[in-house]
Image (cartoon, rainbow, N blue to C red; front, side, top):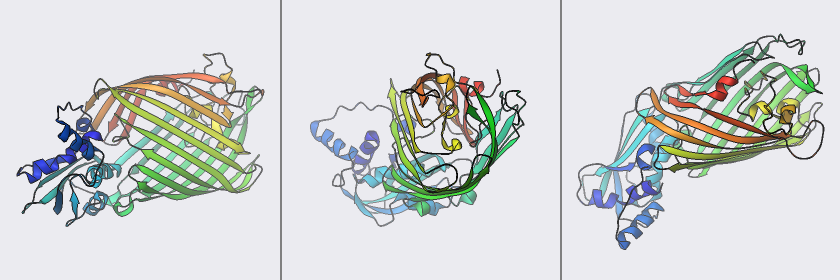
Length: 468
């Protein structure tokens, strides 16, 4: 962001000083993150500082005479114009933070793999043309492929597929389905086939503004192994319900979220209606959220039940997540640190609790909330973490190193090699006691950003899909 602001601050010299060529305002992450070594006099250094801080009083006054958008194939240009936050006839100074933030707002729409903004000289002194060139992502996205085998599910399979920009309207839809075969383990009698369905729709930055809306429908026909003593028992149940909510960008890169969830449950051990509300806050300064180079991410949410008519009482779920990406020795080498924590206060149904499979990289995660494996966490540290499958408290922290292989235009936008390790804790202990048993986790592999989605080929990913 410092370098992006620097480029904005030098617009006056390059545009108003008689330069005919276009002057870049926002550049792809691979460009703006290159370290700039500047040997400036004190006066120019102060000017650059004001530009990088988005000083609205810095630089001469300019007027936007035209906005030219190119590269659009499907997306309605009106969506881009609204996301710009700048209109023809607008008069502002060169240091106005809206100029530097326009590139980020367009990239945040999620419809483009590349966005380039530039200013060129207008028809009169002080007037400029704002040029917006975009490269659209593929319309169809493959969010996830579910496939594997385990001791409790001989086969599980499914797909999560959608269109993030239907007919260029800015509306996204996706459908996901997972099916698991009837269990064949002698230790899990009565494990029936399982089925999960999800339908989601939403629009990000409605009409180019700060408001985003989303809704989802869910259905689970589950036959879940629930911990019982040293083993498991099968609990059949059904869930059906929906979620509706939205978020608002209260300042650049900072969003507030609110949503309502209503579910109807039925089963041997549970049945009734659950209504909950979620309030959250998100701060995301990453330019590229898929293969980040620098920036940070933070999320904090609270979900209390408003109404719970069933065997479980009311409860509150608290969640937090943070991450920081730091380039070292240039942008090809990135070190990142991550942390997650969760707490449930009250009496929550078992499917709302924290599962080891969702916190330990070495285990297969739940597929659309269906538990597909009863594998225990490896107890490398001898803390008894392998005995804990569910809990009301969870925490995880890890560090990762990634090496940039390439960034390019095409069907595969980028690729990184990565390796990471960390610790996780889950509790309370089944036999009681204080503290959380701690486990070790690690992973290494290749992460790709492609035209149809993100693909990760890693040790832990492969380990979670096979039975042993």
